[in-house]
Image 1 (cartoon, rainbow, N blue to C red):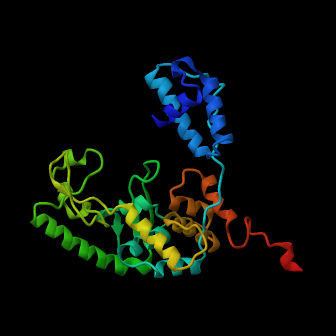
Image 2 (image 1 turned 135 degrees about the vertical axis):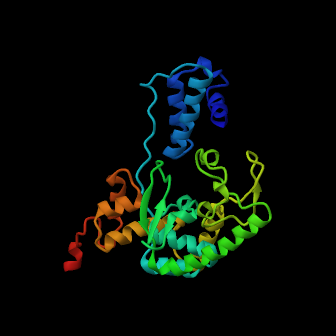
Image 3 (image 1 turned 180 degrees about the vertical axis):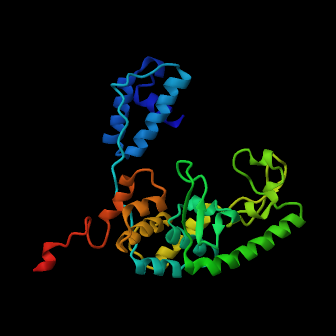
Length: 292
């Protein structure tokens, strides 16, 4: 609705039904030239206007006049090993444990927070990611250095779960229609979140006291403070730990296909971006200046 309002104002308060594809193109061009917005913002505006014309006004815009802006490829922010060590040293508690999994297993933020107890296999040292980006499952490694700490964390989570059960709670939201197939599964230990939220909430659908996973903002704020404490002069975020995971694996000589599988990328071209931020240069080429 916000983009529709801006579009109407830009078009001299004309009704959108009186406008067409060329007007939309001029609006998007003005956003880029005058508003200096990014390609992502342009694409968001276009999506809003396409919804307006297709779903509300019931008409299609001229496809020749509409060109979706292409988001430019940006190099990821990658931390050195010393910077990763300093960042982790500045973290404590659950945020530190989550950050270790982001870096040590290459997980995305919500993949880590959405882990269930059954997704951790201590015997094989594996972490199973369910319904990751693109609704794909994959398996990645569990860092040896975190196993003992993670096991102790699960002991505390199990005590919390037992207290929830005793007080009439202990339920977690389940994916898909599992709650209909197995009504009691939401209270089972295997389905509990590895990183539960600190507070419970009332599920409007079931009327039960449930505990969701920890909110991502808790870890994001902690990592932001840790970057400042560690005096890292980079715009590092939680996702930078995943970028660092991939880059450091390539530095260690692992092939790019293996890294692609661990990251869960559909296309190896997505993984190839990390070859451009290696310490030894984009293609392992030594600079001629170093031979002088």
